[in-house]
Length: 182
Image (cartoon, rainbow, N blue to C red; front, top):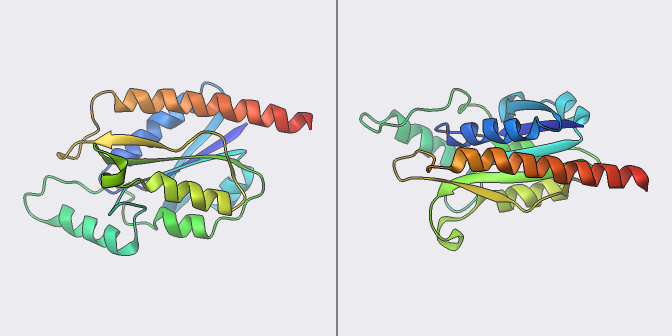
């Protein structure tokens, strides 16, 4: 199976999680890992499995306005924040809204602050809804990976992302085999 891991990252945490998810998937699948700016129609067409992730901004998926705010915050002197090299590309929301696929398997993740999801929000829910509305079939529930207020992944989150990638890989393999039997 061909897996495509697509991510939007502003400060690098979602990028780091995407790398680990891709590593977990590689145990079972061929994987292409790309920022949303490089997620072409050809890559989507070749994918049996699409895994998409973004940071959580203002309780949900990033918007053009929240992305601008994140960029402005990083540019402030003394912020201690560094923009991901691909942060200035398009956002995952716009990419998903233009996504056209048939029967691809899918999974979604986000990065967010530690806390009750009702208070922090979860971008992965919106990602899942958009994936489903574009013809994808979710193989696992959405997942959140936690960052600190100092904007670093919490201890153990990278390893958990790798394990989750393996879980997605197995669920996708089972769904793919099941689909082929029908």
